[in-house]
Structures are given as structure tokens and as C-alpha cells.
Image 1: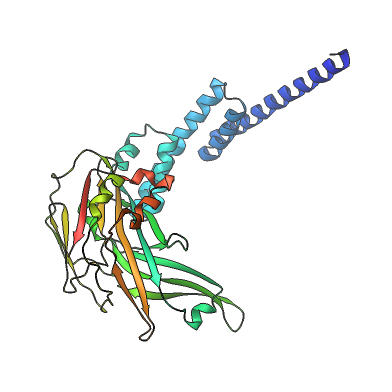
Image 2: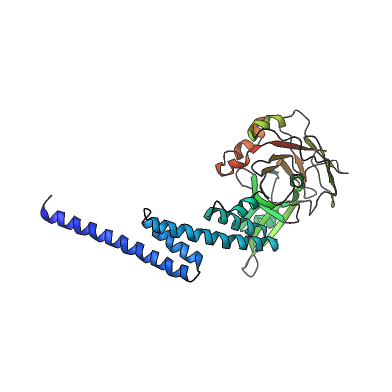
Length: 349
């Protein structure tokens, strides 16, 4: 290496070192200024940038930790306000942020034990010979399922055009385990976007099967202390659902469905004059230890009657593992945390 090359490299090295030091100093100084003004969140951002640029600095690391604790405390206050306002999803995000910033926040850790994490799943297969003219003229179409929740909120899930599977993640606060059985199908239909005669894009929802907003008149028989076992993988339970029973006939739901739920051991009896259960889940997997649950609605088959122009529905009985959509769903790695249980219930008429 000649003298000129050595000199150039040395100058570049000194330039970058100086630039890094100045940059770190700038963000750290900005953080201190914002901290003095009690602008904790903004100060934490500046300290974070400074720490990324100089992760070996104990002084910057201590400042960042100090701000994270303060921002976590602010988040927890906002969390409690969201709870008062019953804005549960916003509240849960604030609680997560609180623990992300301060994992040892004792009140936040205690509150996390009041939340259930839910995965609501199912599959919908459609059989029809042709779409109506209204659907054929649509600009966009998306199959959706609407789910009734115990607290009255209606959840919306997209039905994949490829796999026909839907899944919805939800969180609920201070729900009793037996309340998780109260989720039900509201509607299965199609969200449509099409242009009006004036050229504006309008959104409509075409209901194929409509159970409406329903909830059990009564839930009885729950025993809280019994039945929890060692945690197992959900996929190990799926063969239990295989059956040689005859398939149910297609069903056109009445305008009003009423029902009750009764726990009997590992069975949840769905008591209804219709003697059908398509509106209720098929299986409820509980993981009490990790506060997670999987509410499985099973495999629906819907068929259009071309003469009456009405859709019928039935829940398909699974005769072999190839028909069980759950094996395909289980390959969705981000959802893997839901596929374990320590108690399982099957819904029966």
C-alpha cells in the first residue's frame, strides 16, 4: 500500500468515526432536551436512535431504559382509560406496548392474565351453477363470514378465494371460559364493489346464509375445576373427529334461530328446535395455561338452488383426514401458538 492510499483510508476512517460520534451526540442531546421537557415518548425515540448508533454506551443505554419505563407507565394509564371506555382492542395494544417497553411492569403482567387470545377458524365451500347478473357485473368480490361474539360485537373474516379457509384473531377481557362457546355464525356472504350509473364505486354485502345476531338463551353445566389436562398439540386430536356417519341434508335456516348450550363433560349440547348446529362452532379448544383458545366452526358446504334462488348450508362430516382443512391451516406459522390445548369440547345436537 503506497503512502497516498494509506492517507486516503485514514482520512475516510477518521471522517466516519467523527460523523458517528457527532450523530450519536446530536440524538443523545436531543433526548436529554426532550426529557427535561417531560416529553418522554419523543425522548425515548432519540435515545433509541443514539443507542443503535452506539450500543456500547452505558450512559445512552441507561437513558433509554429510564425513558422506556416512563413511556410504559404512560401506556398503562392509557390502557386503563381504554378499558373504562370499553375499547378493548386499543386497550390490549397499549398493554402489549407497556410490557414491550417494561417487561417487569407488575400491574401490566397481572392484567395480561385477564385476557384470552382467540383464533376463530373454519372453511366454506360453495356450489353453484352460475352467479346472478349483479355479481357478474361487480368490480371486486370478496367472500366473508360475520361472527357474533358474546359481548355483541360482530367480527368479520375474509374467506380465502383459494383455500376457502377463514380465520379471525380476537382478544377478550375477563371472559369466563364457558363464554367462549357463545360465538356463533351471523352471516356468510359476499362483499361486492361495483360502479353506479354515475361512475361511483359502491360497496354492498350480499347475504347468502343469514342467521342474524343470535346468542344462547342460556348456558348451563359448566364446571370450572374439572377436565384440564396436560397441554397437547391440536393436530393430535383431529383424527378423533373422523366419522362414518351419514352426511346431513342441506338446510335452509329459519328467520329466527333460538338455542341453549349445556355442558356435559367434554360435550356441549346445542339445544334448539331446529335440531341443527351449523350456527354454533364444531369444536372448542382451550389452552388455559397460555390463555388461548381456538374456536373451530368446521367445514361448511353451501349450495345454490337455481330454481328458488336460495342458498342452503350444512356442516360436512369429515370422513378422512384429507377433508380436514385444519392440516392446511396449521402450516400458517404465525398461528402456530393457537394449536395447543389442555381441554377440548365438541358441540353436539
